[in-house]
Length: 187
Image 1 (cartoon, one colour):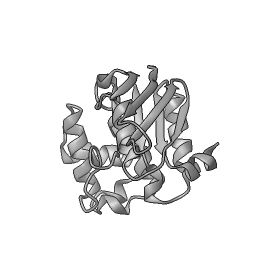
Image 2 (tube, one colour):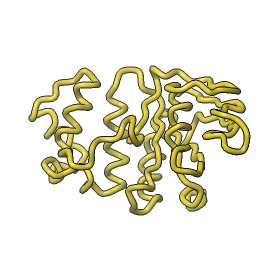
Image 3 (cartoon, rainbow, N blue to C red):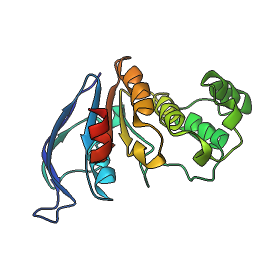
Image 4 (cartoon, one colour):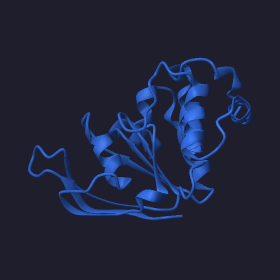
């Protein structure tokens, strides 16, 4: 398990800063980080994942060991792409065989074979978070997941939070960047 630390990390400055100074230490368990505004979840997720440097403050993370999960713009599949295509692409990123047999076996193992040929937007929210998290963990060396704005897909946050807690119990660092109302539901 790795620890991710932000120490007064900020992008921009003053009242209109895209990310005002933020401090956080994430390690064991699931860390829920509430952020507001439309752009902040993406920017904070990229800071946590080591994909973006802060203008001030510091970030202590190992980008090679951190995966961004379903992060808008950066790691979010197009809503009309079939689930089997998404899984095949993730298998390729993980250096695995992306054959139909391998994809079907993975979806069957995760009890999602019935969704194989439907657009990814049809996947229930808790299943989406679970599947995309498991796919990210297939990549070599990944020990931390940054799950960005899972509430945007609807559903009951407790359902996907339970999935992420189970992943954290396996020794994976999990950070959920979400909105304030969802964070309050989960606390």
